[in-house]
Image 1 (tube, rainbow, N blue to C red):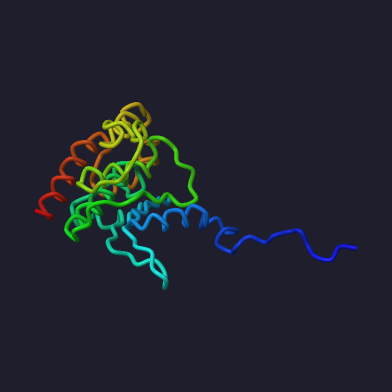
Image 2: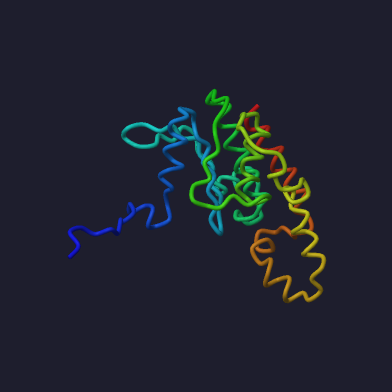
Length: 194
């Protein structure tokens, strides 16, 4: 007869797929500020956090919803929006006199060229040092949204264009103008932090 169970129940946040405790412990042991990049289907969030006994203290935060203040008309869940969110968070961190951080991707699998790395590229372009490997970032064309503009031009059926790009059209932006719109919004963000 068994005297004790051999099954180990993981912590609740690990079971829910929210926290990788081993990775979190290693990041906290470094003693550096973490840049946290999280992407949902419709938004991107970039935060600079410091671990404390009471819990993480968020020093600087930016979400893709804030991009509308700078004139962003495209949806907030795409790759250019993730880059701009990282760029905005990086400029806020620079203003708060933060100079370096380490990347925290959470429980997501790090995929080369993903929105997580687009957000990191935005943070780096804002002037914050974050250690990273080569070849992980999306190409400049994808960051500007040229892949979206090319897809718009490939579709021939106007009904399909309207169905797939309804949010762009509702906000008065056609996807073929996205690369120019991206540059315009990036300049607006830079002007706001000069």
